[in-house]
Each structure stands twice: as structure tokens, then as C-alpha cells.
Amino acid sequence: MNSIAATLADCDDVQSLATTLAQVCAAFGPVAYLRIMTLSNRGQREALCFIQLTTRANEAGLAALLQATWVDDFLTLRVPLGGVDHALLAQSLAPYPGVAMTK
Image (cartoon, rainbow, N blue to C red):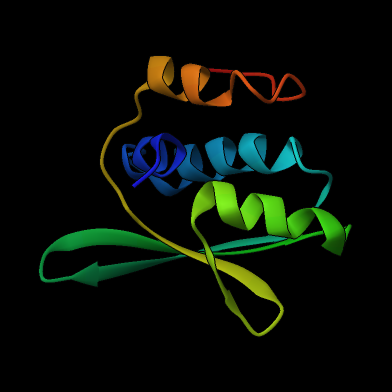
């Protein structure tokens, strides 16, 4: 798991995951579609994320960063819900200067 995926896994609720994921995606262009569904698997809370950018050309880079898979026309990412480490996220996003961190 890369550091971005690990940081996403530290989000403790859907709102913090959506905010963090939107910040990561913004480095690759405007987000056209972002939906998060919650799941419960053997007592472990998880989120299933579906993402599309407005520019398809940038989605390959985002898919590689997030280690996401394609389902139909959506980048799909499954994330366990935990608690966020903002220092790790900031370090992970350092190569993407267009991403602004907020708490």
C-alpha cells in the first residue's frame, strides 16, 4: 500500500475521506464524479469510492497514485475507515504542489 492509500485508510469517517480524496484528485484536474458508499465487512467499516475526472487523460495518473481499479468508467477504490494522519498526507502530497491541505 502506498502512502496515499495508507493515509486514506486512516480517515475515520466518510466526510474526512471525501475531503481528503477530493484534495488528492484535484492535483490531477477537476472531479466530475465522486461517490462514496459505506460497507460493513465482519465488523470492519469500509468505504467504496467511485471517481471520475473531467479529463479522462489524467485518470491514469490518479489510478496509479491511488492504486485504484477500473469498474466500467469509474476509478474504484476500497478504503477501510480509521483515523487520518495529516502529517503523512502532507508528506505524500508534496510532489503535487497544486494540492492545498486543509484541516
